[in-house]
Length: 397
Image (cartoon, rainbow, N blue to C red; front, side, top):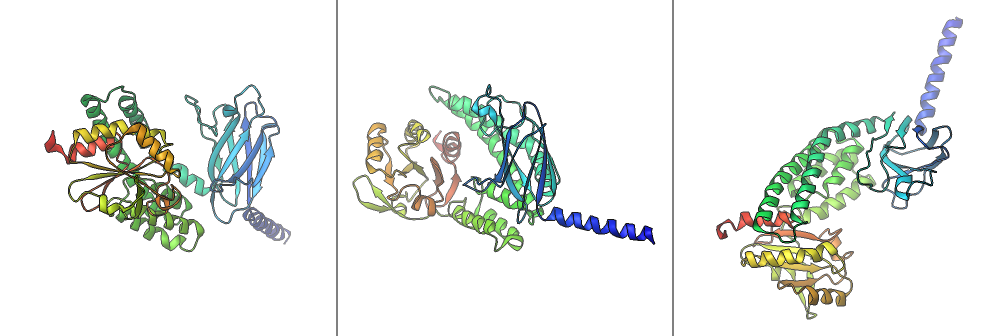
């Protein structure tokens, strides 16, 4: 009888422990290196205010953080090292991972943990995290993507060194950059296809929702892709704020995705008149619709290339749309750079129509459209534009 009573008590204790753990998360951290008295903080990675959920001071290489989440959530953990001999960039370590209401562990070496600020040539090793099935799923997917993404990064850097470092972009340099662009596009497609496949197979996981958020920025996304992503995720996420935000982002994305007709809107001309975008699009051939600004260095740096394009492909049209708030700054840049093609301006700057209608979150943003205004390429600048035009105007060679 005593034996059964003991077992019953132990069972009740086990249930109580489970209930206690499910009340929130507890992260037990272990750090190696010069970390005594380092300050550890954690906050929701999606929170723009970076409100600290919990913090702790490292003692004897250990710390503990507690809190509660409504569902598995990507948190950012930062560690401010006490070593004054290190630079500010080296002193601030950071890592983002999924937290859920369970006992978790976080183990890292301060000498190799990723930093908040990018430090070239720093050798990093990701922390080891246990206790979160969501984080395990995320790490498994990241491991599957690592080789593709590393190759993509290396090839993109190599292309940039060939294309953007050249004092003069000769035909041979352009040809080499275009060749590499074909490889880059194939790798991007592999990465995007892998994300789409992951979303299909893991639609109920927050990881899938976050991967869909990454695809919002993919230049290769089609209107069909947008529809499928939302359809797959809707049963698990409809009615939740994160999904509503994704729907909003994807709806705007769809306006400017491959296969969509670029939206029409009113823009200002250099002489103060108003004109609709579709009225200045060419009735034949192709055009580049480029959003830019006078304060955007990469935008201004692209102008000599666009002059080269206009000279090489006379049948090609360019419509540049400034997102400058300041009309005078826009006109001053035009006077300095002297582009010969159509120039317009968003009257309400980058936060107005450019963002709400065209989904512009940063410049330069370049869209190649056909004679019907249908978008045939997103991100059409630099070697991408060279590649597209060499294909579209092959007979001109």
